[in-house]
Amino acid sequence: MKSKDRNYFKILRAGINTTYQDLGRNNLYHIGIPFSGAMDKRNFQLLNSLLQNDYNSPVIEFAYQGPHLKYFGKDIFFCISGNVSFKIITKEGVIDGNSYQCYLLKNGDEVDIHSTNKSVYGYFSINGTFGVDYYWGSCSINTQAQIGPNNGNKFSKDLEIEIIDINNSFNKRKLDYLGSTIENIRVIKGTNYDYFSESSQNKFFKESFKITKLSDRMGMRLEGPKIENIVDPNIKSEGLVKGVIQITSAGDPIIMLSDHGTIGGYPKIATVISADYDRLVQLTPGSNIKFKDVSLEDAETLYKLYQMETNNIISQIK
Amino acid sequence: MIKNILNLGDAALYCDFGNDVNQEINSNVIKYFYHIKKLNLKGITNLTPSYNKLIISYDLNIHSFLSLKKKIENIEIKENNKLEKNLIEIPVCCDNNFALDIKRVENKLKLKSEIILEKFFSKNYFCYMTGFVAGMPFLGDLEKDMRLKRLETPRVKVPKGSVGITEQFCNIYTFETPGGWNILGNTPQNIFDTSNQSNPNLVNPGDTIKFHRITLDQYNEIKR
Image 1 (cartoon, chains in turn yellow, orange):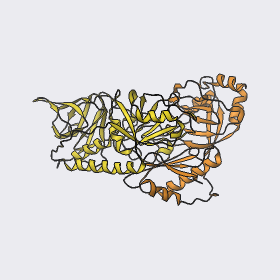
Image 2 (cartoon, one colour):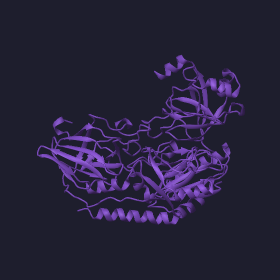
Image 3 (cartoon, helix red, strand yellow):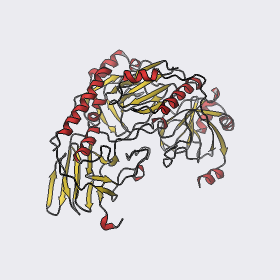
């Protein structure tokens, strides 16, 4: 490609844990590869809907602090989802941007994504397609197993993000959406629930747990009342799914997230329901959470309601 | 052969084949795994076989627990279905630089290192499962007098290619990762190949592994 025909972003600052993500890769647990994919699927979906992209188009995910990008190429629109503070730097001046609104970028303009507010993950994309390689049907970067584009590594300074396709019939769109937070994390009791003493079972649901800094795309470590195991601190290693809450030998809960190890040997006290996963991953270290017990039937209904709510939000894009 | 099907959260079936760890139960898990994989059922998003469990993840938009449970319960697999097995040879170098825990293993097992390695290399091992990190095979079984616990304090970084033992099992570290297994050597062979997307794992559940010992020169030769 001739350089004058190129459309690309140059990364002036990479931000924290900035990666490509899409819906992730299926049917690879048996060889040790987790789903990966955007942590907050609702914000992923909203972003691609706002930009009129294919529902599984790659986006750029960042945590806490996003990248500072400089654009080179013909006119393009970008949009950011999540609760994010960012500035758009053009020849005319600097403006503060709003999430869920599309903005025009011209050659030489910059987007500086300062931070996510009271949340962890934000998403950036354009009315077009990033030039990414696919691994097992997905461009999601799994840094732990070094799978995905950019040799499976997170973004670094000076990296150039190629754009291979721009949707020229795109009309600027926006959404009035304030995001959705959650007070209690709803769970279904786990397969080893009876490994724990009755008083610990009660504490698990009555007391609150603090999210520690040892939290990333693989898992979220919590601290709070120690959960006492009265059977065996280990089980024979078996499969895990995202949302599973294991109790370590030290008595602390650890929640499996999208890049988790596929098998594990700690007993499972509970599993976060699918309807609450997107909001769980957005809780920042230092936050306190409480678990609430729900039935499997309720969890299935709550998921349907959550999906309906997402579709309802998408229908309000104008 | 499945004793019981429970739910693991709201989007996975937890198929229980028993509590013991042995090749008979595990072979049943693997037979189910390959059978269901071949059926290519819509909405199944992952299958995770382990020693004695099979976890089936599904898309909640397509299945509910009860409907999928019924489908799985109606699957019939003949007990005498033969499992496909490959015999795979893997070279291992036990040079002092690689055998990180040989002294500890000598002390714990009260055996001389040469005896330990002779015993280790004299057996074929069965692959129960792969996972935790991409491609890591869980192999068994070690002789009773070769069994010991994991390290009290796990290593923060176990070098890629390390071959370790714990209890009745051995494994190969396919990536540099934290871990607590007793390391006896290192293989120059790539066990997980990201660039081979159709078959990235050298070792798959049900396969048989034969380790053979190589010198440091041979190790460097293969590595080159």
